[in-house]
Length: 283
Image (cartoon, rainbow, N blue to C red; front, side, top):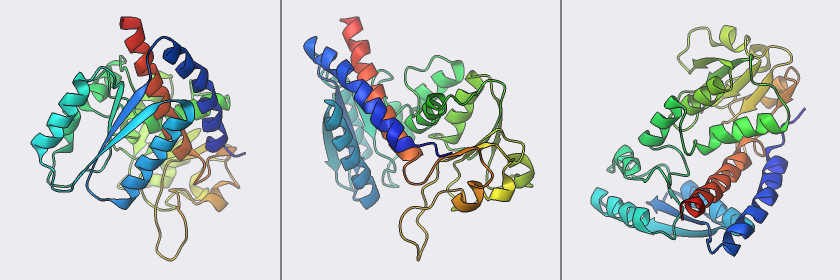
C-alpha cells in the first residue's frame, strides 16, 4: 500500500488554514523569511515551491537571494536583522550554501524561536534532550506520515539508513522518543542487507539511488524512501529504494516523488504557524 505523502500534505495544509485565520484575526500574520545564497538551480526551485506553499495557506513569505560571493559577515548580519524583526516568525537558511561560507556558524546565529527548519546545533541539541521547539522538517514529516496511516512506532524495530544531521540522526532520535528500537546504518555498514531485513520500519535516507532492493526488506515491513537522486539517462527523480522490487515485499511504501517530499514542506508550514502561535501566547 502506498503511503501517499502528497495527499497527506494537502490535508495538513487544509488544517493549517483555520489556524492561520485565527492568528490573522488576532493581529498576527505568520511570516517565513528564506535566505538563499548563490545560484544553485535546484535550491532556487525548492525556495519557489516553499513560497508557493506558504501563499496557499495564508503565510507571508519573503526570500532574500544573496549573490554567491556574499561574505560570512554579511549573511550573519542579515540573520541578526531577521532575528530582531518581530514580524518574522520563521527563518530558513537554504542548504547548501557556497563552500566559502561556514554553514554551521550561520545556523548558530539563528534564534531557536525562529529556527523552523530545526537544523541548527541548538535545535538538534534540544532534540537530544527531548525539549526541541522545532524539529527538522523531513524527519518530522516522516513520523507524521506514519501516524496518519496509523502505523505503530512503539516497540517496533526501526532501521534508518543514513546519518545526516538534517534527516538520519534527528529521525533516529524522534523514533527513539516514540519508543522504537532504532539502528542507524550508512553506506559503509558491513553486510547492510542483514541489518535492513530486521526492520519493521525501514527508512532509506543515504543519497544512493536504488540502494535498497526488495531482497533487503523483511516481508511486511514499512518502507520509507527519503532519497531524491538524479541518474544519468533517466528522467525524473529516483529514490534510495528500488520501488518495483520493494513494493512486492513491503506492506507500506512511499513513492518518489509524492512521498516524503510534500511532507517536508507541509511540516515547514506547520512549524511556521506554530512559531507564530507561540509568539501570540507570549504577548
